[in-house]
Length: 270
Image 1 (tube, rainbow, N blue to C red):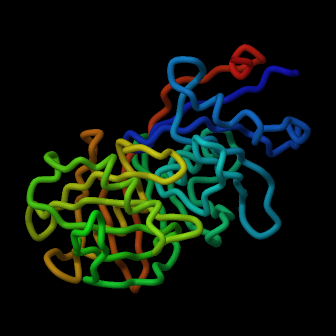
Image 2: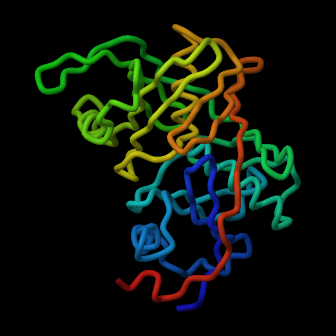
């Protein structure tokens, strides 16, 4: 098989392998077969997901977005910022661009060398303050779909929460079948700041950041405790700013290039 060029990029700690297939040169490569292998840390490139950039008939570009387990996700806010920077730096688009995703067309803008502002899909399925039973204990949750589904739980000290076990229990709960849900715990810092941790389905683990999760937590917290703009502090130590303007929601944050390279059969034959 041919060598395939890639960039590895990080959006606030959420990392992705990005591949440019605008010219259709990789159309015959069976990416889906190897996604989980390419994302395996320690044995291959390692990432939370893989994004393949393609031509679009309705936007500047389209993407195929895969979670690290090979499943397809409708939307990812951190990946959208990385893809925006990638497309601009590779002369595929201008600084302002549109991206076709499974959640619809989103608008994005490369503001400077580090900062990208991306509009996320209109949220839906907002449900506040209801209970779910786990191990015979009722837990108060809220939920919303910000391109992908999220459950939000408020805690006073999120560092003390066993997010892996809690996240898995809710992610696979019958209430959210068949596709499951992402799970976030959120701590209120002040009226314009929150801290979050996110368990992501498809990665099946805690990630260092989650763009759609940041938006979900910001929206839910704005109904109770906070006001826009809302700074979201992530597990990875970086921050995202959630903005609301004329009923539309935006995330403004960094996207960085980690490395550039090529992979061949050794990356996916273990």
